[in-house]
Image (cartoon, rainbow, N blue to C red; front, top):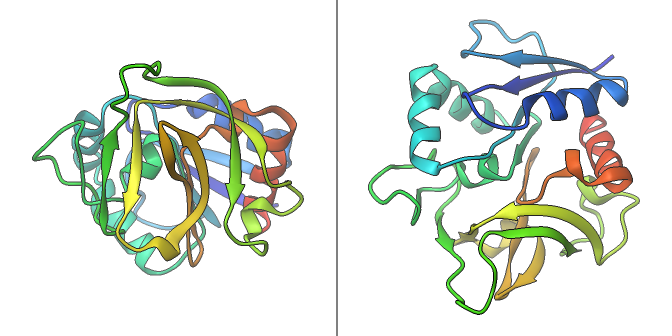
Length: 203
């Protein structure tokens, strides 16, 4: 049985994510602070809320060095929503508060006044690569559930795992080695979300 570590920084859909992994047969443990020893196979960073306070809470709980070490070692990782945005250098949501800096780039806010912000609801996701293991068994244009006001802008386009259109065509998921991240919420995306989480378990 695969063991999943789910990072708790005081916000996020922890129990929904844990319940989804348990349904798929994985053992999921919620980590309230950075562990001193690693007893799990994969790490998940779910997220909702504000970029600045989220980063501060991660630091307070000792997750900054732990996350950098985990990511640099290319161990299986999944960031969800704000957990994806944390991977970058900075965000317009909280200028001056640095992100983890695992990936070069920044987080920007949707600015079109004719659109509802945050984007809430289902939208189509278009994988860039056919061999992306996170999207195995998932068709191009499949719909996933989004709730966000900000989107990721990587400097290196090669890490873009998929795109979605809302105001503009933006990066809706990442793929770098064994590190994956999605702007949408697979734990709220019904059957397709469960397929994606099962794919992650098998990585």
